[in-house]
Image (cartoon, rainbow, N blue to C red):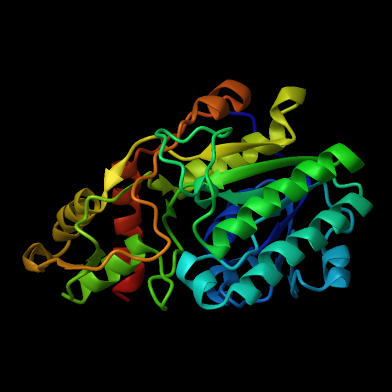
Length: 327
């Protein structure tokens, strides 16, 4: 695959899980600017980059338009990852989620347009499909949002579309489906399910599955997401820009299947983990029962070919967690 080289790339939320992986990858051949306020990102995710002359850290908030303008100066591409994730967080505090995810997004769009950035690629979300029951999820068929978080991510898509049509800025939205992998935080009230379960297994604690475990997700390994971001930067196909893409593997895994795979892979490192029981709790408000992406559009327009299945990615992630969480 062709690579992006010798460009200046702004990665907002660059100290977060996905952002820090993007920083690491693109720093190999490019100049990278990381904008982060460390509200959900971590310094330890980027500490190894700080001595790299091609890496610049701007500690600031996307809710400040002047900070956004400073960050986009001389930039070729924006990879906008900064957001307050988590459906439960948005239900508990919809105002802050809206401030960051909508007002902050608009600030970044305005700054990118004024700086004549070549292309603005942003993290959209599978939550945009809302109450649509159709499977697999296809980009043009969505339902009503089921949480404040989902509303904010849909509004991002609407703003990007309007800015493309009104101001001519090139935008591409990537609807992430349950991304997992290295650097994903296992701690905190809003931790994603895979690192949270891994951390619990490593401590011989029982993971709690919301519901009966038959809810399913399209779990997507981080390297597939990096590939999609690069393809979105590379494309010169006019039909491939100013639109949105599912960013996934295109396979459905139930929570029961997930937890059994985690047990299996972790037991290879520690046999005792095989004996840890699973606990089932209540379904979570705002959760959709099933999520499965069609990746046909990305295959057709971006030549996307995901390299890691869910299980292949899970093996990589478990190895990373074993080596990093056990220290």
